[in-house]
Image 1 (cartoon, helix red, strand yellow):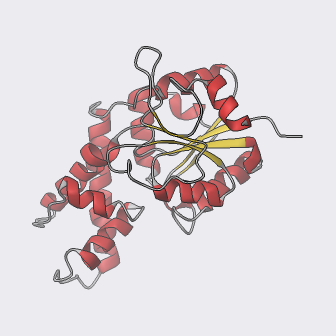
Image 2 (cartoon, rainbow, N blue to C red):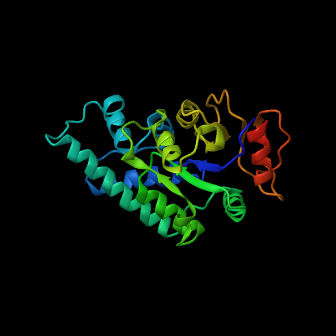
Length: 253
């Protein structure tokens, strides 16, 4: 007998909000300028850097592939960590100023799930500070408490596409993968969730619309609202917007 849906597990960047292009990228560039570095991550370059998850990992990838002539300082790990910490400070301030809203349908679905006493969790490679800044600035100062588990950042050894972050969240909730559904937006995200055994709903963004989402329950352009429906990009279901009843049907299909 199939198990009933017990929990919704959300990715953050690109899934809850379009944070990458106008959030993280801008914050990285501010940190570089602050450190007197002449690096500038354009929108197109950042799209290529998104092949790697994790901010510190992204800086290393940039220096390996796009700026190999840069002379690395002796304390390179500390240098990277410092840049990333500065970037996080800039990003958190952007969130506190309310510069990046949630994507369509996100707040409605989360509040509906909460009202129905559905268990909620977050599984992301971004830092806990970034998660708190986004959630608190968009859903309210007490909204972090809505999520039973906040699995974020360096809490696990390997970041997405490894399944570690989802496995951590499942273990903390005491649930099996076939009792939960994940919400993702990228190839690395779905590789991670699927490797953990989770059914996955995809909402693409400008950077991920051409990714391979084979095996996704459904691929949408956004979660949608009753007055502004979403578009089904892959999957046979007739979905106009994601509400909890629709999520349950997709989970059970």
